[in-house]
Image 1 (cartoon, rainbow, N blue to C red):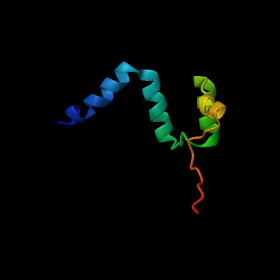
Image 2 (tube, helix red, strand yellow; image 1 turned 30 degrees about the vertical axis):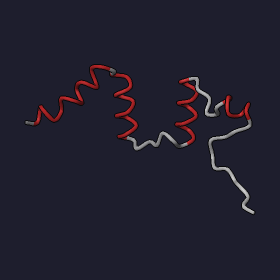
Image 3 (cartoon, rainbow, N blue to C red; image 1 turned 30 degrees about the horizontal axis):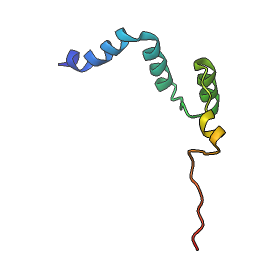
Length: 70
């Protein structure tokens, strides 16, 4: 019975051990991936830019927009 509950964990570990251990360590240390030091490090490691250049070029953002009602 206990083995059946741990089977999905072992499958994830064998498929991608590095990302599994990273998630496990961040969970144990209670790191929030949205906090600045972790977020900036992840962006640097992945080579991603948090800003979408296509929206900036078009002058549109994905955030809330204001409208005026007459």
